[in-house]
Length: 291
Image 1 (cartoon, rainbow, N blue to C red):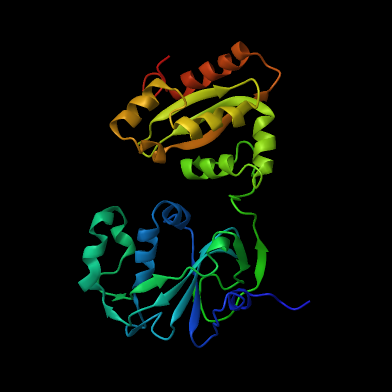
Image 2 (cartoon, rainbow, N blue to C red):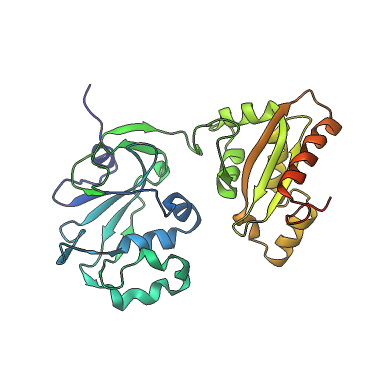
């Protein structure tokens, strides 16, 4: 069977790309979570791509191409397609454009002021397949920018987030939870498994605040977390207070499970486990639990 590649797919959309006019880039997850940046702030992600170091102290990595096919690294040697960008200007002194990132001082380490700036424009081509096309990058993952075409490994359903890794093996940020809940058909494994158990869960934020809660009754943990997606605070007093001070504070929340329990347990039985974890973590004294 002939190999179906990313360039072949883009050609079906009328964009003829080859090794002479385009490059593929794979932004690798590491110290910086590019998935978070891409989901939460496209402008920041696009700026990051525009600022590049000088290659061999001379030219920039995008100097010999017109188009950039961009990916974010996923598990192993796979990568997720996030768009095609056209280069509108050639090499410019990055220092002249550093003002564009002043509002992103937290991410200043990503940008090389002494490097090169390229003005890039994201194309609308293939936009319905963004974050859904998974390619096989190959073993040379350290080489993040290549001319070689890549084979498409799979095309994920619309709204798919990621594979369920096990009840105690994940931390979801609010964006991920919202995508999973909103697109339940594309994330059926999550819905089936989270609906089948009661349990004790933890909500934390970037400041280290912790809230311990419990889920019981119909639809278990899934049903309780649906309420957070709908209301942002889940009806919890101190979470409401945080959102009153900053209505977008929910974007800092991360969700994880501390313990799963049988859905056959009563409300009072589940709450006993919740109290145990509140005491273990000190979330009444130091955290966001009121009682």
